[in-house]
Length: 90
Image (tube, rainbow, N blue to C red; front, side):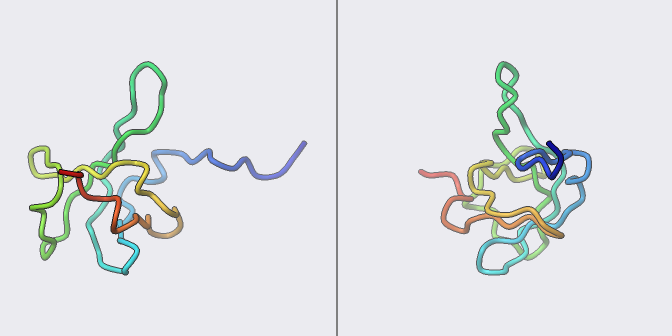
């Protein structure tokens, strides 16, 4: 069976993609993706935040913010993340 395999995206193709939230606000640029060692499930996007982004609501690691992978809504020319899901729930 030919055709496109859904759900398989090369992680290498994703790095340096811009990340926007569902309101169209630039979040930053994708740096890396964290996967769970045992399962290979994608856990978090590691994003270099845009200069004007308020990062206080995000989980942080050094100069990067971490966004739960389940916040990702679409991967096109940019990665769209759900504004309501991208912050760490307190």
